[in-house]
Image (cartoon, rainbow, N blue to C red; front, top):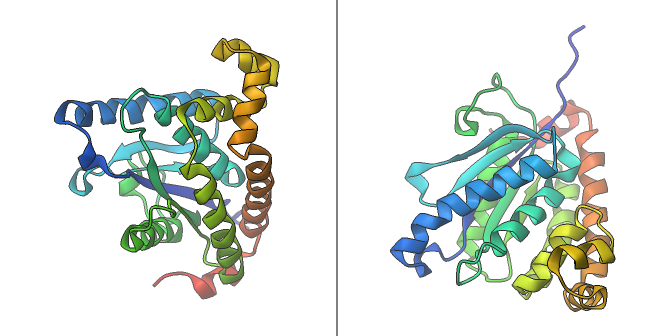
Length: 237
C-alpha cells in the first residue's frame, strides 16, 4: 500500500506598507528578504521543502513551502526577526498566512508551480487579513479543521498584538532566543550585558509569547496527524 505523504506548510507573505519606502529602499527589500531566507535555511536545516520565490504580479508577495510543519510559526518569527534587524527604516514588518495540508503536485523548484489544499488555505488567509486592514493582525493559520483554526486565530490575535510593539533591539534578542541560546550567549553576540538581554525579552513579553508559541506548535503537530479523510470534509473546492 502506498504510504501517504506528510502534510506540508505553505507560507505566503508580503511586506506591510511597502509603499512607505523610497525607491532605493524598495529595491533593497528584495535583497533583505532573500538574505533573511538564506539565514532561515542555515538555522533550520532540512526544514525547507520548496525554496522562496517572489510573485511578480503581486508586488512584494513571496512564498515558500516548509516540511517541518510544527515549527512553521517559529520559522516565521525568526524570519521576521532577521528582516526587522535589516537596518531599513521604517522597520520591515511582514504580513503572513500559513496553510497546512497536502501537496497534490510533484515537488518543483518554484512554490507557485505547486498546488494542494495548503496553498489555497495560505492564499485565503493572506487575503483575509489584508482585507481587514487592521494594524493588529499580521498572521493567519488555516488547516481546514474549524476547531483548530478558531483556536489558532484567537492566540495569533494576541501574539500579533505583542509583536507589533517590538523594537529592533528586542527583535535581535528574540532572534537568538528562538535558537535556544542562553542570555549570556545572546549578550555576547549583541555585545551588551546579559542583564540588558533579560530586560529586552521581558519588555517584549517574551515569556508570554513563548507559551503561545508552544501551544501553536502542539496544535499544528496534532492537526497534521489528523487523518486526511477528516480534513477533506473542510477542504476548499
